[in-house]
Length: 92
Image (tube, rainbow, N blue to C red; front, side):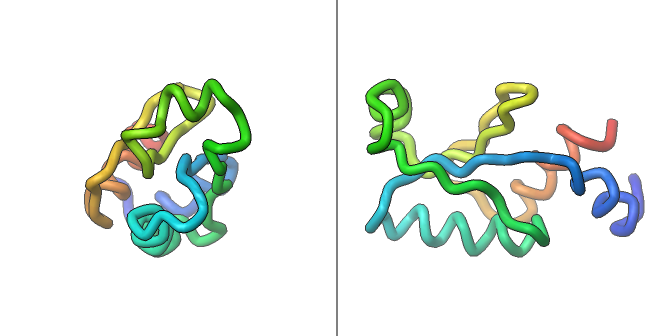
């Protein structure tokens, strides 16, 4: 398993998105967990901004999404699950 330092190097160029909506307490919880794993945080996307996002994610938010691989991690998740998700994306 890569050291923590290597993991940080691997995720520098990663662009993750967190699909959610304003006022969603689960989305706020998810953002706290994700920010503990990703030093620069992630791009938060309000699904209310586009109809396709509403249709796809309305009953599933919060969802952590990697646009490069199109892989998703749906709620509920905890910090070890987010770290494992990131590890699968970056450090193979």
